[in-house]
Length: 313
Image 1 (cartoon, rainbow, N blue to C red):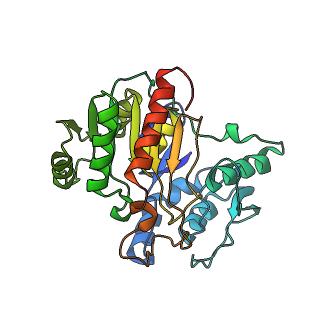
Image 2: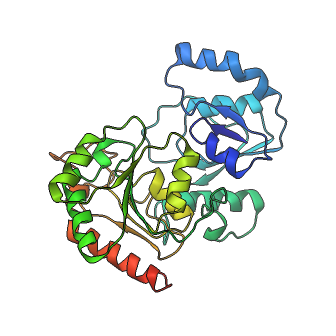
């Protein structure tokens, strides 16, 4: 398998017996980035012999095209991306292209695209459950902690600290549950701690895991996860943990919402400017900041109560 440096830790944990070729996820410039990449990896890529190559990344890029051309498979299955925005001059060799979905019922577009690719490769009807992510490297247990993971990949996708603090305060007025926070090691913790203190949220434990394994274990042993659209949200969903996740409109529907069961609830505030690719035209991302704290509290209570009853939310 050819995977990126970002995905490597999870692949090594999930598929320890599979040989991995780990490459940078992107190549921004022809010089020197692509030339350095070719110098380091071209010989290894040319040594790979395969009849069939499947590309799961939907956005076309000449970086991917170069990788596939060096491997030179007899057939390459990939998504046909018709939405524009990508500047490319190459293409996949001997490609079998499957149209990227415009709509998807019951799951996100990315998983529907993967389902279509599996059908293209196998020639058989494929249910969405076949491609719905599952994590086996961490054992999910019924924990007794509300795990709050406030950060997303970009600040524009964060639920503001004062709103998050109001959610946690009001939830704890109804449910007696220890609260723990999880942030990346390099994150600035002060705005979140200040907001919690100002709202009267009791002292909580703050985690800053340095490895993916550490994050996996925190999510796996939690009772309930609260997060924006982020790695913890997707990990929790893959583990089928109860969770409430806050989703903005920049790429709405592409990577989320999706779920393993009714234990996962994705909240959003619909707006006409959805699909802005996070080029927000407003003073703040209203698609996120207009998700009312009371709506989040009610979702948390519903998921928690149904979990305690032993039923799906």
